[in-house]
Image 1 (cartoon, rainbow, N blue to C red):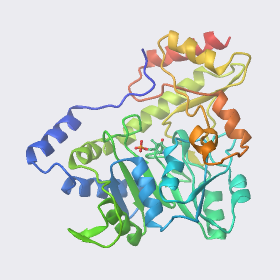
Image 2 (image 1 turned 60 degrees about the vertical axis):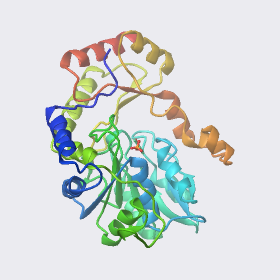
Image 3 (image 1 turned 90 degrees about the vertical axis):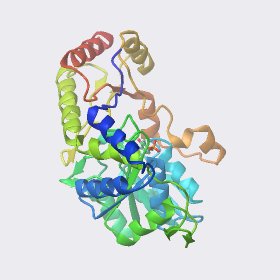
Image 4 (image 1 turned 60 degrees about the horizontal axis):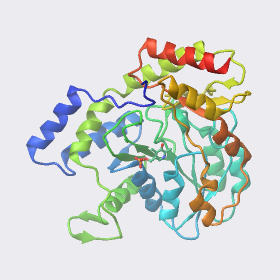
Length: 361
Ligand SMILES: *Cc1c(COP(=O)(O)O)cnc(C)c1O
């Protein structure tokens, strides 16, 4: 089986963890500080605050900006549910804008249509490893006095016009094992705002700067030194991981050209796409689900990200969402992601493209 995702854990990661375990300091400590410093530097931001998941990073970024009941947050429904759930955690209301057909990222024109006097934040998601149109989004934010929190959970090392994902507004990243780099479970918030960084640190640890002095309501969303030691090691490899992903994607696109009913990933010229996923669209006579089952029979792993847009999820319907967001709804029926991770061999890529060709012909 060629898996759809595979974390790369080497001897360096194993030794880093052993070193932390032997030290006896296994919860949040110096390794977390070192990881934060290294990640901020990597992303071109002044501060980073490490937490225990990407979901926690989103939740904290919103809380650090004082978002809560009565506020509206515009985001995309074509993402992992964590993006909008984090808005619900705060008591604010997620408002869904539709996506662009070519990049699957939030459509700036649709954002404009959704702005009301209650709008406080835009959360663009850099889906599949390609940044949303940050030029248009930052302009909209400036014109309407809105906060931007980037969901960069799939976009470590991605850039837009040469600037790193997560450095436009506040950035939020995940280190779940399927992501471009991992810490097991984990997340981080990047920011250039010292006050936001300080607040985020307090919220992650029961609202305290000083032990047992609690200035606000907070949570326990801390990262461990065990996880941070993996993160430090993985951060040293992320550029190589991404280079492999890009090379694999280019190889697939060269081999999958000119197949009827198959739309290959569109790369915005302003972006460095880091291919968290290599996602194609199936529009021919064969159904997407038939392509999935044929590939799986041929021992090729696939992923559907995402089969149901968030506004159509049972829980969101219960909350009263009745939006019609046609571009997202069609995409959820047509997309399929093929393996693109750094562990693939050329022979795997050849197998994937030959199988796709056979199925689609
Ligand atoms: C993975 C992911 C998250 C959540 O990250 P966790 O670490 O799993 O909490 C949020 N948004 C997107 C787009 C993701 O891909």
